[in-house]
Structures are given as structure tokens and as C-alpha cells.
Image (cartoon, rainbow, N blue to C red; front, side, top):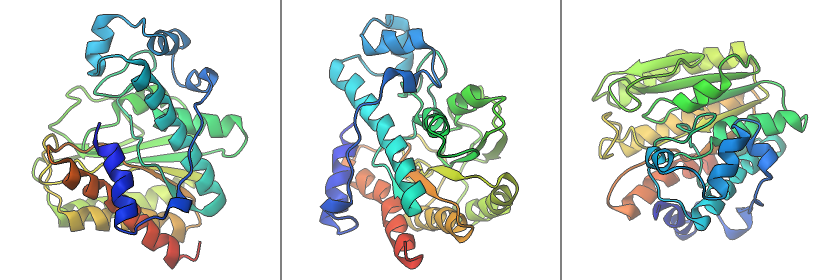
Length: 283
């Protein structure tokens, strides 16, 4: 949990972002969460009455502070998406809770921002079709399960095959990668799939989960990307979207390492790439 504050500090310290570029979301109404989650589950979690077994599956002990932080982080993804629709590109400093299902949480994920955000935007009449590009090392199983059968939201997950979750849920497009894949074959595989998806889905918005757990030093990753590989990946995704005039909102996704400073710097690769691409496209 300590990485989130460090991301903010690093963005400011390294000049990747200035104070006036940050926007603070308000806590979302429960009705927004219920667009992708069972109302009874939402109420039970927010009031601290979820049973012990369900809490163990999430992996965090309950607290009022965590419940509030969870809601604010999810609202950050919604706000980033709204800002992307206005400015072309925006990034959350959290988000990517793709293991949360309709009526339970899992894998350190409580509510699924990647499923809630597009439905909030659709309810507001801001978007029709949305493409979710999930490049976290772990498959976005909760996102896929919640959005199965929803033709207006296309789910694309490119992940390590031999990793959590060990029972995958079918996305609209799943690309499974072998353990130990390095930069060049990874980027080549992404290049084989993403441009065609953007052309065929023709979304009004892309939600991009730029998890850094494919990194070679990640404790839970099993892939072998370098810092440069992550940077090139993020630039490729953002440029592919903006070249087609498709707004894109990024979330930081997963990343696991004992050295929180190094982990925060790694998460900031997305924001550094976004800052450069934003300037290059004159946004």
C-alpha cells in the first residue's frame, strides 16, 4: 500500500507532473458501484459486515480507512476517463483492480474500477463503446466475468499463462504468454493484436491497465520485461490510441517488490510515457 503515496512523490520530485496537473476525485455514490457489483456485496463491504471468509479472499483486513481509499481510487479511474474524453489522455495514480468480481473481491481487489468506470460513463451518455486493454501480468478475470455478454465493452487481456488466477475467465480476447518472455517478443505480440483491435472495435475510449508486474524483478510476475520494455509498451499503447484519435485513460495496475521506492519509480513509467506522448500530440 505504501507505493501509492510514493508514486505521487516521485512524479513531483522527478518533474514528470506538476501540482496543478493533479485532480482529486470525490467519493462515488454507491449506485455507481452497483452498476458492476451486487448491491448486497457493496453494502456489506462498505459497512464492514462482510464475512471473514470473503475478507480472506480479498487479502486485506477491513477498515473504514481502506473502504474510503478503495472508493476514492475507483473514482480516480472514472475521473481520469472523463478527463481523457476532454483532453485526449489522462492517468490515475492508482486503479486496475481487475480481480474483483460481481459479488466478491479477490487478489487484493475489492471493487473493479475497470468495470465500473465504463458503465458510469455510459450512464452519463459520454461513451458508447469502450475497449479495456489489460497488460497487467495477471489475467483480468473479474473484469472479464462482470462484462461477459456486454457487447458495448470489449475486454482484452495479455498476461502470463502460468500465473494467478490459475482458473482463467474468458475475456473477449485473451493472449497467454509463456514464463520468462522478454521485451522484444512481448512487444511484437502486443503489436500483432492491439492495432487491429483499435480498428475493429473502434471504441470511444480505451481504458489501459499498465501494470508493471511483467517486470523481471517483480515478486509475482514470472515475465522478464525491463524498465525500457515497460516504457516502450506504454508508449506503444498510448500512441496507437492517440494516432487514431481515441481518448485513453491509464491506471497503474499491479506491481510487487519489497523496495517501495524502486516500485514507485517503475509505476511512474506510465506517467512519464503519457507526459511525453501528450506533448508530442499537442494535447
